[in-house]
Each structure stands twice: as C-alpha cells, then as structure tokens.
Amino acid sequence: MVIHLLKTYSVKIMLCIPRTFDISKTKSYNIVMHNNIVMSQAPNLRQQKKDLVRLSILEAASRLVAKGGTESLSLRKVADEVGASTMVVYSNFGSKEGLLAAIWAEAFRRLWELEEKALRNPDPLVRLKALGKAYRRNALSNPYFYKLVFSGQLFDKEIGSAKSIEKDSSTSQSVRTFEVLIETVDACQKSKQIIASLPANEIAAMLWSTAHGVISLELAGMLSRWVNAANLFEQAFDNLIRGLNNSD
Image 1 (cartoon, helix red, strand yellow):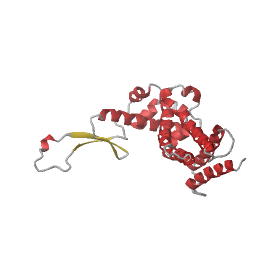
Image 2 (cartoon, helix red, strand yellow):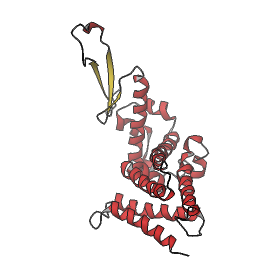
Image 3 (cartoon, rainbow, N blue to C red):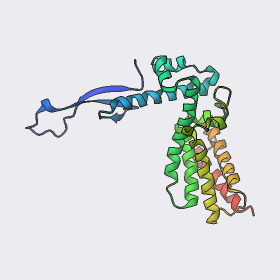
Image 4 (cartoon, rainbow, N blue to C red):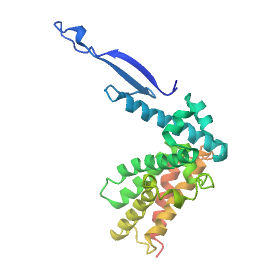
C-alpha cells in the first residue's frame, strides 16, 4: 500500500558523537515526513502513520465533495485518490456517512484549534477581532473543509441535518465555535466596548455574516483584482463594530 503523503526514512542518529562512541550501539528510527515536516522519531511510529493515513483520507474526501458534491463521493474514489485499498477507508470510517461526519468534525476541530489561541487575550475587543482573524485564517488554510461546512453541502440526505450531526459528541465543537463568539460579544458589551443594546447572539451573527461574505468572495478569487482582501476583512469588522457603537 502506498500513501502519497507519507515518506518513510531509516536514519542513524550520529550528531555530536565522541571518538570513543561505539557506532554499533546506535539505534535506527523510522522518520515519517508529512509536507516535509518530521512527524516522529519515536517508537509510536505505527500510530502516527495511522493518523496520517486518516488525515490524508479526510483531505482527499473533502476535495472530492467540494468539487462534485456528496453524491459524487465513493469510498473507492477516496481510496484511489490516496493510493490505498478500499478496506483502509472502511476500517477508518465504516461507511460513506461516517466519512462525511468525520469531515464535519475535522473541519470544526481545525477552526476550534485556531479560536482557542485567539481566546487567550484578556481584552474582550482584542479577543473579538482575533476570533475574526482566526476564522479567516482557518478558511484560507482549509478551503475545502470550510466550503463544505459553511456552504451547506453536507446538510443533505447523505448525512442528515446539522442538528442530527451534532448529536454526536465528536462534532459538538461546531456549536462551541459560535458560542465563544457570542460570549466574547457579551463581554464587549459588559465592558462598554460595544454599546449597542442588541442581543449578543444577533451581533455575533452580524459579525459572522460579514466575515463569511468577505471570505467567500476572497476564496472565489473575486477580490484580489480590486482590493487587498486582508485589509478589507479588517475594515469590514471594524466598521461594523463602529456602526454598532453609533446605533443608539
């Protein structure tokens, strides 16, 4: 079986070896490379390989669904895409529906990973803007995953409604990624950094809609000819907050 994202090397660790060192006692380790990054030099190599195989399947599946919709996806196509057997895909996800649910979960796991870093700032307004930047950074880094979960492509008969997906604890992060935005808006209101009396969830939805609009145009390649997308994103966020502070 060949997984094109994986490269395995056998090396000798020979740095800073004194003259009295017995070369026969050096240990050989397999080193897994993913996108030219060393993933492991340790005995848990087998698990890391499994994780990388699973990740490569998710990435391939997200591309296929983003381009052709869920109806065009089959486990055989995904297996061919990554150079694996169909059984490898089955053993990781169980079924097509399981694979689609895993795409959903992975998309929000990646978003949450960036949002967690944004939430570290103690200033609510700085935190709010950092969340916006994290949302955009995630979309640009993971365009296929972003498109699938925020364009509604996974909300069909193949996988059920968003509500049914989120009954699985592994995908409950999708709710949390928006809850933290509401909580941060609420903190901004309590600190008088946003003075609009609208409910925090409505303001959060405005910010989300604004971010999604700019990002969707950017991903479609429709902004670069006219404006700097990063600057536009920040201006749109700032202008909305400014407008909310002048609304009463």
